[in-house]
Image 1 (cartoon, rainbow, N blue to C red):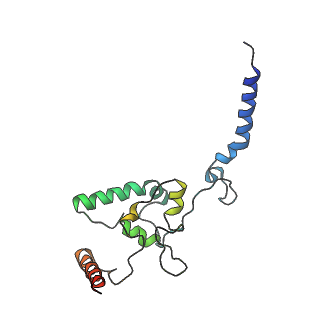
Image 2 (image 1 turned 120 degrees about the vertical axis):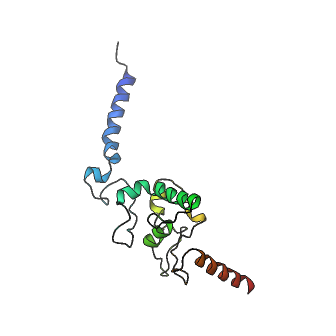
Image 3 (image 1 turned 180 degrees about the horizontal axis):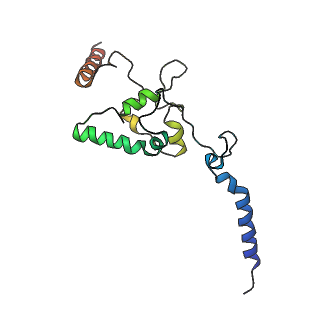
Length: 161
């Protein structure tokens, strides 16, 4: 069976594309390259304020959503409230201050979660209901019903004026 010119051309194009594009598809860490020298974009979100995260960094990068969903299910369905994988604790540790000195909100492109979520094309919907800034006001030290009462009193006071 004779080799067709189209087959030879296809093989040459495939080989050429592998030689040109091959190095671009290698993750810089696997290739032992510095992120700045690599032509592959890899997100590098800022580190949290604590000494160490509640779990290994690589583990948290891969599993944070599963952990947050598990925490949510335990809290909402079973009434179990723990701090280990609490969204509120994540926000408090990973908050980034803006030019005004106040923590950035989830709407800011520099918000901690944004870099990786944009890279992965994943929408951040947590903050449609949850606060994206740490609670640093008068009610920061309050817990549970006491905080809810204080928040409600503040809201009602604002409505009366």
